[in-house]
Image: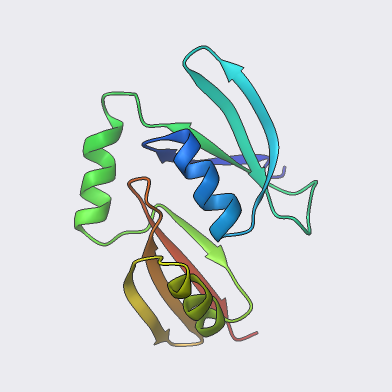
Length: 129
Protein backbone atom coordinates (compact mmCIF):
# COMPACT_ATOMS: atom_id res chain seq x y z
CA UNK A 1 0.00 0.00 0.00
CA UNK A 2 1.28 3.47 -0.88
CA UNK A 3 0.05 6.98 -0.22
CA UNK A 4 -1.27 8.32 -3.53
CA UNK A 5 -2.70 11.68 -2.52
CA UNK A 6 -3.09 13.83 0.55
CA UNK A 7 -4.93 17.09 0.87
CA UNK A 8 -4.78 20.45 2.54
CA UNK A 9 -7.92 22.57 2.91
CA UNK A 10 -7.47 26.00 1.32
CA UNK A 11 -9.62 29.13 1.44
CA UNK A 12 -8.94 30.01 -2.21
CA UNK A 13 -7.61 27.47 -4.71
CA UNK A 14 -6.09 30.06 -7.03
CA UNK A 15 -4.21 31.86 -4.26
CA UNK A 16 -3.11 28.52 -2.81
CA UNK A 17 -1.90 27.38 -6.23
CA UNK A 18 0.14 30.55 -6.63
CA UNK A 19 1.67 30.22 -3.16
CA UNK A 20 2.46 26.51 -3.33
CA UNK A 21 3.94 26.72 -6.84
CA UNK A 22 5.71 30.09 -6.74
CA UNK A 23 6.89 30.27 -3.13
CA UNK A 24 7.29 26.56 -2.34
CA UNK A 25 8.27 25.26 -5.78
CA UNK A 26 5.65 22.57 -6.33
CA UNK A 27 4.39 21.84 -9.85
CA UNK A 28 0.83 21.33 -11.07
CA UNK A 29 -0.03 17.70 -11.80
CA UNK A 30 -3.80 17.95 -12.38
CA UNK A 31 -6.01 21.00 -12.83
CA UNK A 32 -9.47 19.77 -13.73
CA UNK A 33 -12.54 22.05 -13.51
CA UNK A 34 -15.26 20.59 -11.27
CA UNK A 35 -18.09 23.10 -11.14
CA UNK A 36 -17.17 26.03 -8.92
CA UNK A 37 -13.95 24.31 -7.77
CA UNK A 38 -11.12 22.29 -9.35
CA UNK A 39 -9.38 18.97 -8.84
CA UNK A 40 -6.05 20.73 -8.31
CA UNK A 41 -3.07 18.60 -7.35
CA UNK A 42 0.59 19.43 -7.00
CA UNK A 43 3.75 17.34 -7.03
CA UNK A 44 7.39 17.76 -6.10
CA UNK A 45 9.28 18.90 -9.21
CA UNK A 46 11.94 16.22 -8.70
CA UNK A 47 9.38 13.45 -8.15
CA UNK A 48 6.60 13.68 -10.79
CA UNK A 49 5.21 10.25 -9.90
CA UNK A 50 5.26 10.81 -6.14
CA UNK A 51 2.50 11.66 -3.70
CA UNK A 52 0.16 14.40 -4.91
CA UNK A 53 -1.00 17.28 -2.73
CA UNK A 54 -4.66 18.14 -3.35
CA UNK A 55 -5.58 21.79 -2.77
CA UNK A 56 -9.00 20.98 -1.33
CA UNK A 57 -11.59 23.78 -1.09
CA UNK A 58 -12.58 24.70 2.48
CA UNK A 59 -16.25 24.86 1.55
CA UNK A 60 -17.56 22.06 3.81
CA UNK A 61 -19.13 23.65 6.95
CA UNK A 62 -16.90 21.59 9.29
CA UNK A 63 -13.66 22.82 7.74
CA UNK A 64 -13.46 26.50 8.82
CA UNK A 65 -13.80 25.75 12.59
CA UNK A 66 -11.35 22.85 12.24
CA UNK A 67 -8.76 25.02 10.48
CA UNK A 68 -9.26 27.89 12.94
CA UNK A 69 -8.73 25.55 15.90
CA UNK A 70 -5.50 24.18 14.40
CA UNK A 71 -4.15 27.68 13.74
CA UNK A 72 -5.19 28.92 17.19
CA UNK A 73 -3.28 26.04 18.77
CA UNK A 74 -0.28 26.50 16.45
CA UNK A 75 -0.73 23.08 14.85
CA UNK A 76 0.47 22.74 11.24
CA UNK A 77 -1.97 21.26 8.73
CA UNK A 78 0.92 19.68 6.82
CA UNK A 79 4.61 19.05 7.29
CA UNK A 80 7.15 19.30 4.47
CA UNK A 81 10.63 17.82 4.71
CA UNK A 82 13.51 20.02 3.55
CA UNK A 83 17.27 19.55 3.40
CA UNK A 84 18.05 22.78 5.27
CA UNK A 85 15.41 24.55 7.37
CA UNK A 86 17.60 27.61 7.93
CA UNK A 87 18.11 28.05 4.18
CA UNK A 88 14.38 27.66 3.43
CA UNK A 89 13.51 30.00 6.30
CA UNK A 90 15.70 32.73 4.78
CA UNK A 91 14.49 32.07 1.23
CA UNK A 92 10.82 32.14 2.20
CA UNK A 93 11.19 35.14 4.50
CA UNK A 94 12.77 37.07 1.61
CA UNK A 95 9.56 36.38 -0.35
CA UNK A 96 7.44 37.82 2.45
CA UNK A 97 6.29 34.51 3.94
CA UNK A 98 5.12 35.02 7.54
CA UNK A 99 6.64 32.58 10.03
CA UNK A 100 4.91 31.80 13.31
CA UNK A 101 7.88 29.74 14.55
CA UNK A 102 11.48 30.40 13.51
CA UNK A 103 13.88 27.49 13.04
CA UNK A 104 13.88 25.56 16.30
CA UNK A 105 16.03 22.59 17.31
CA UNK A 106 13.94 19.71 18.64
CA UNK A 107 16.14 16.72 19.38
CA UNK A 108 17.55 15.42 16.12
CA UNK A 109 15.45 17.71 13.94
CA UNK A 110 14.98 21.38 13.12
CA UNK A 111 11.50 22.76 12.51
CA UNK A 112 9.93 26.06 11.46
CA UNK A 113 6.27 26.95 10.88
CA UNK A 114 4.74 29.48 8.49
CA UNK A 115 1.35 30.76 7.33
CA UNK A 116 0.46 29.52 3.83
CA UNK A 117 -1.82 32.56 3.16
CA UNK A 118 -4.75 30.15 2.67
CA UNK A 119 -5.78 29.51 6.26
CA UNK A 120 -3.15 26.97 7.31
CA UNK A 121 0.08 26.65 9.17
CA UNK A 122 2.76 24.64 7.38
CA UNK A 123 5.76 23.06 9.06
CA UNK A 124 9.08 22.60 7.36
CA UNK A 125 11.28 20.02 8.98
CA UNK A 126 14.87 18.86 8.66
CA UNK A 127 16.02 15.56 10.12
CA UNK A 128 19.63 14.87 11.03
CA UNK A 129 19.91 11.41 9.49
